[in-house]
Image (tube, rainbow, N blue to C red; front, side, top):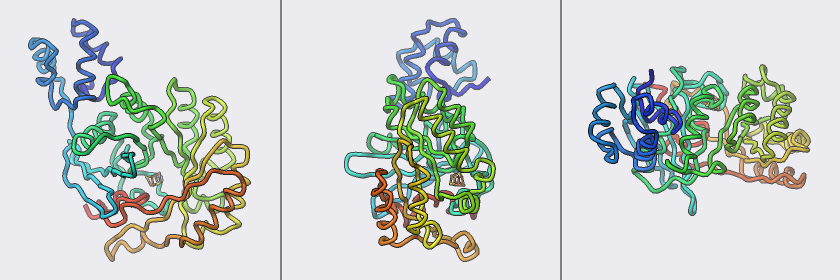
Length: 349
Ligand code: SF4
């Protein structure tokens, strides 16, 4: 049995408390002390009777905690956290600040098997899925060091749909009013296109925002950039997105990393607009970020970012087609914290 109290939803804690012969309402104290007040251990949950706290400890229950190894600050205000897990695996988390918003980009796996060619994480050896506690604790830890996190995006290291159960549990915990109380529309789960995960998410009773990492409007190009496209090609992926939208009535975000001379031409923009016709969606055009690597890792950086003129030209085609389009310029470039760079610093470990 999992003994980590941080890894449980309020419902699971209620069942646990009842099983231990205690009153169900005590679970609320445990949940809110862990997730709203960041209590580091059971002894700090003072509304519980001392005997009950001892009972929990004697039964092996505990509250897990991420170990912060290092913090990196980019001149543009982006902060990257390097965390170590109990088994010494390491993950990275990025805090992005703009105006009133603090957005935390959390990791869901140690490494990733998806092997997207533009991504440093895909070059790391896959070790394991994170627990819900390890996902949630990235938010708890950063919030305790910085100010309140307003948005959480599941776009860090790993493919969230490949760790579905922990991700949806983390969404429930972060969204719960007794805990962090982050609004469901402020939680975004991103996927490279895992169709079973998209369809499963459609059936849940809560729906975070969904983002699809698309990056190409044709199967030939997308399969080159993202091998998962061979298994879940564009026509099937977009059908799954339609099913998701018909069930949830939510708008979906498509992410498109612009790579110089590869997927950034006007023709590709026109094909993309045609592909997405009929979908309630918006597009984020992301400036490609080559990881800053050592000389023996040069193979990881065969691509370059599109120039700003090409980005604007691409965006104009989409906007003319009536698709809401946002250009996202690089952030955290100096500290390997930008999109596609996470894990670049871990390649040597
Ligand atoms: S882009 Fe996402 S899914 Fe693709 S290799 Fe990187 S972490 Fe994995």
